Image 1 (cartoon, rainbow, N blue to C red):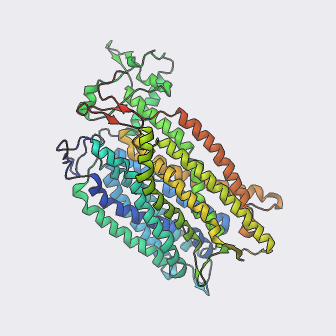
Image 2: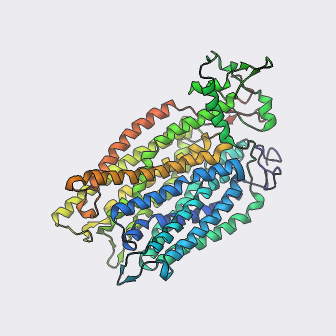
Image 3: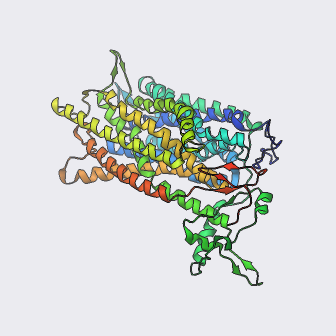
Length: 584
């Protein structure tokens, strides 16, 4: 039985009317959304997991070029959501931004399927050997890929936040349900990725690239039909400000304008509306915090022309700017872990191609399919995390999430470091086997099972249960209320920049180590390279990054909001908040 007839967080239907709490939102609404997420992830990983193989075998690109192009495309897919989130938060809203972008995504998938299926759009092949692609064929292929990246820019940041919007933060029961939302949302995402890395990759290499891309295209269109069937029960966040990012810019501009003023000794002397204003408008008031004090100058009260005290910004607006600055600090230390994640679809695959991939006497495992073990480990550990780890830690810490969001990230980063250390050790063994058997040609198979790579894949999957889901939830939870789509792009853009950073590192390491006739660590012939050195280099970067992350975490202060809901206490990150009007 709902405590109120209408939702308490101000959500509305598609026509802008208040919605009934009992008939809308919650998991029954999310059920229409998770199908799209599963099929979209199946489409993305169906491309990303095996793209390096297509580029090298069909378009004849070398190792560095193919790895760079895969990273650049993946980076674009993950970084374009910044634009899509801005459009959603400032202009169209999440639903309509998603609608337009999903159409672009489907068009891109249709064109990509044509690029690998239609005779005059793909390179001609004879006896398994393909001719060099024409400039037109290459242009058509990459245009299709980057059209998908544009579509993902509008769907990725909005579909997950739209799902989170289906839970009312002011309803204790729904807020408890929301704690598990991101875990199970990512579970559906992992399910789609698993089908891609197990089924689609095999279909692409053994049956047809066109069929391998066509299946997720049809699935994507079907999932959109299901998504729109659920429209009557969706909740939509009402936009209360036209351009939320402009408020952030105004705080920084105000702090710069007042840079010569002296901050008052007591935060209560800074400008803030009373609690009744926030109750009336439905906005959320944020407590003053002691970090980034220079921004407080934007809220200093000054005497105006009419002798009345005025200020450029309120404390809440200043705190929203502090949140963005704090999230940026955390975002910077997620870039190296994203670079480690980028190895799954690039160098790990190149490693796997050189190894013995036989499973039984007749079946040969596609190298990219080993990525399915990343997904399998996620699928196993997400329920364990949600059903066992969280309740156990909740009893010990009193935190509704079991551990804090940053502690969750830190655990994931430590597991990643262990994974890349194992990857380096396995590569050392692979090189030893190469030397023992005097293997020289790039197409020679190293007599060593591909399953030696299994531990690094499994560990990266377990790490993602902590850091991938943790990052998505952290950036959504800590974002200012009016910027939650844009907030989640801290997660996606971090993955995107991590891919670009990996491209940069691969290129620079190749040029530096191959200078003056030296042997490149990442040469065209992987059997005559030193990927172990490159993994060791990433290991050192990861260890240094962990130190930086610990430092940033110690300085970070979680968002604390004041709300007035029937004199109840709303549980936040670590402490229960007093819901009475706050004096700052």
